[in-house]
Image 1 (cartoon, rainbow, N blue to C red):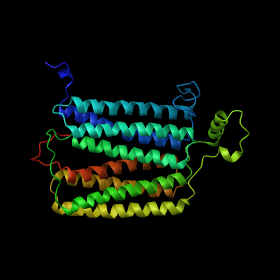
Image 2 (spheres, rainbow, N blue to C red):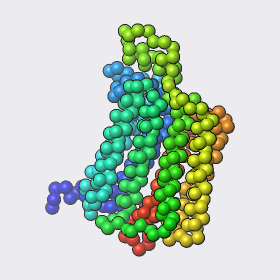
Image 3 (spheres, rainbow, N blue to C red):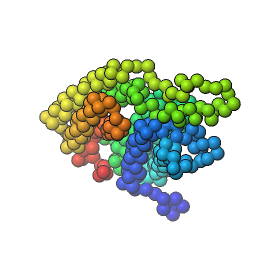
Image 4 (cartoon, one colour):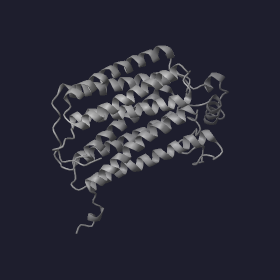
Amino acid sequence: MHMFDKFRLTPAKYQRITYLSVLLLSLIIVTGAAVRLTGSGLGCSDWPTCEDDQLVAEIDDLHAMVEFVNRVITGIVSLAVILAVLGSIFREPRRKDLTWWSLGLVAGVIIQILVGALVVREHLPPSLVITHFLISMVLVWNAVELHHRAKFSASALPQPIRTPLRSLSSLLVLLGSGVLVTGTLVTGSGPHSGAETTQTKEALENLQEGAPRLDSESFEVKRLPFDVPDVARIHAITMIVFLVVMTYVVFRISQSAKTKYVFSQAQNLLTVTVLQGAIGYTQYFTDVPALLVGFHIAGAVAVWIMTLRLYLAFRLPIEPNTKQLTT
């Protein structure tokens, strides 16, 4: 008996590990949004410590605790993706594609940690904050792909469904990417900078102690130089185009669906997209309250995941005659 045999994982157990990765990577986006919307982006003005030699935030400092909790969850995410790699190695039967996709998660998380540190060090420049968010969405894509692939116990993956709808599902991924990018431009130009003026002032003074006195403009977190109504209209247009294509895809699938799974994924995506659009319009016409913005960001994650699941339902179909695991 091999010494590592007792660590062998069944495909079903490994699938649960990949599902955990999807959940945690989605959660870290939401907690990151909470950091931004509560103005806690510089609650911990140093990295990897919170303040100078202080690793843990003060319990009575709300902004510091919000930022610190987000960092703790990042650590948990890091452990989860390492577990995904180890799980792919000890999974029986072992599949190289699962190992490569899990290693992609590790690489992405390392990049995210470095970018996150740079965001704090540079005091929340919008270009880096946007980059940080979009990398998170790429990581979610990686995790969703890994989880979908883990549903198949056999080494041979199914062939893509040959239908024009598969091309439309790819178009939805492209349009969804556009919706995410334009959404970040709206946020980067809007009122939620991620840190309060007093936080920025203290962070800069701590960083530049003994340096010449800073002017008051240095205390403001920079925003993107776009007019919010203009970028909001562009974002709304991309969302409407996405919704129109999505509605057409659902209609076509209802007429010629290959499997119930594909149709259920399409229905879920359409439902979440309509809700997301309603939240977006409501927040715009109510002066973008932080709570609604938080729900909107969580909705964006949900729409992105559902879009990817529909795309994968065509590319790696789950069919009754395919050897697979149940979710």
